[in-house]
Length: 254
Image 1 (tube, rainbow, N blue to C red):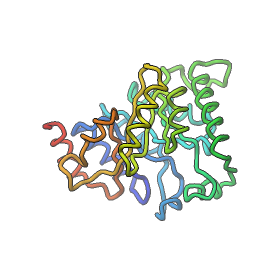
Image 2: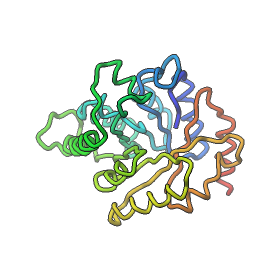
Image 3: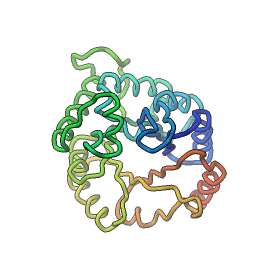
């Protein structure tokens, strides 16, 4: 997960190319148009950067974790994701999130462009409607022809609450969870989400910081033990490409 805050786009692409070369499974970035939410001077447009990543790599999955449904109309998001799929067939995921809660740091972006923020329950209802709308667009069900008829990409929901996680289990193809400080709580949440997915294919990744001092970028064993399918490791610019390469080599050998 390449943070776009204060980052140079060419540097983001170089880090993605290194990740592709050394064996990481995916490269993702955030959906923010301002550094305001992170105390940084700027952010970078995720789809512009991912387009460059798509044509510069050959193996890694890529996508935004997660696109903000409050700031992006479903047709606009479907078109952007479809364009990525044309550049990187079979490698794109569509991450989506329910937006920020009023009064939080991330709400500053919504305020900046005059988007009203709903309560959590209302945002979850809107998230389900947005997922349904995206799939309808990709199926071509009586909606504007903004895409060229690709296979629908996996829809991955980003969630910090148990309620949103259960919603994802019913309506999406996967979930990206914040790790937090309590692995026991995370374990029980993952177990409940697996049950909610009713045995169908459903990928759970856990969002954590990349520890460049650890040989494996952080210990993956506890996350494997509690049922996570993937780690999503976030890193800020300037990206430690040599450390990323070393960690990948250690993971391959472990």
